[in-house]
Length: 115
Length: 114
Image (cartoon, rainbow over all chains, first blue to last red; front, side, top):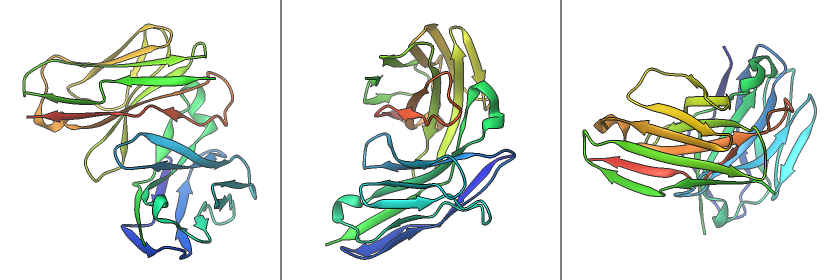
């Protein structure tokens, strides 16, 4: 079945540091890929997405590129801020899942940014 | 625009008591609806999904049930809560068509079973 493997956390960085959170996937079909962010005590917010190979999703300074050859969708940000502290989830939707369109999530990576 | 509402935001219930969590979506028709649970310090587990009124699919055997009495209403229930039911419950929706559409989540319900 489909699966998403995320970089183990927690990750602690100083403000203005470079961030990478690794994400790799396995899927039967040709999935769409997503990054969600969860701030403390809140639900999940869609951060960015990519729907085909070499697509780059970007939002709020975060970027991720859909790499079919390495089945990866790593999240990056050039300069993190304290307000970026949250849990980040990589996820996919496999079009072969039919009308149900279920999201498969990674285990999440806790990011803490220190001032 | 579409919005999703979940309530209550927090809930403390004794073991053996019933549960009802409600989720409604506005601004769309015939959405796919989902219930996820997030245990403390862990990832997200899909509990139920629905592609239409009265159509419920369960992903894991458990002490919970779901119902969809109206097009944009999704309810998570239990007759008798267990300690292991504690967690953060998230409702989500997506359009019925468009294979690349992401899921949109509510703000969640923090359930503590004591």
